[in-house]
Length: 367
Image 1 (cartoon, rainbow, N blue to C red):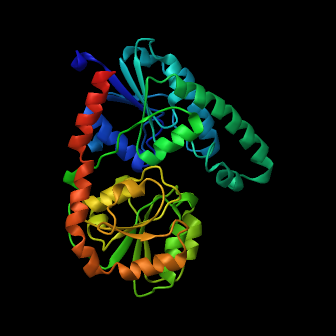
Image 2: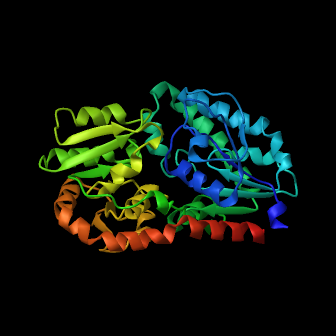
């Protein structure tokens, strides 16, 4: 019987509450699954405060040094996951699929691929530029080794799920395997329209691929418009973007440990701005629409699958030129944003937790 099957979800770390982590939170609610991660500590957000009721299994001890952290994570999932033999269904999320070696032969192994690792594949050159010159040869060697390991592990999966048609195409291009699209959900009970204050909101991670620096540069040219940027302390571009906005009274930053009040900031905005490079899947636009807020976005990546043409978004070119952002902000006035409320709410309902729960349970029943 399906109900007798023991299910566990492996996710690399819960250091942040980014889109991947918010997806995993919805997944364990849908499946009532145990969760294993590299570590759980005061340095990451508390899953028990998210009403997680099942077993939490740490794979190793905590560490926060970035490069060493990545290597230790690989080691931990390779050699510290013998507990997986107790489970019938194992769902792998993100950078932990090397643990598949420790599953029973009769267990079902499902990989939810948020994207093939971008530092290895399509954004390799972008990551390489950020590596100090003396460390570039080592980075290339590690990428080569991790690529071999990753592709071998993926081929041992019984099923590969992914978050969008865009990522599905990327998986096919780089890995030559088929995958099944299962869109991440939003807990609509937590996202409702509140009010409309006088600011536009960016809550993407401060990293090169999210191009928040361009959003800041645009608002420097329109001082009569206010921008609020939500950030996390470990965001890689944090200081650079702080420096860009120095002395700008219309640009404010706020950090939200544990994402407390996050939905309120979304619910009180005029609109949100989200302009990543060829995004695999971003929770931000769906969460924005769930608060009945339209999105300024770029014409590439998965966003084209989720946002209704002319009704829930304002479109800019994929290059995300600063002048295009300025034009879009001026076009998306508070009055226009209010007029888009109903369409945003309707589209967000397609990504409900109820729909997701029914779909993922049906998928696992058929394995």
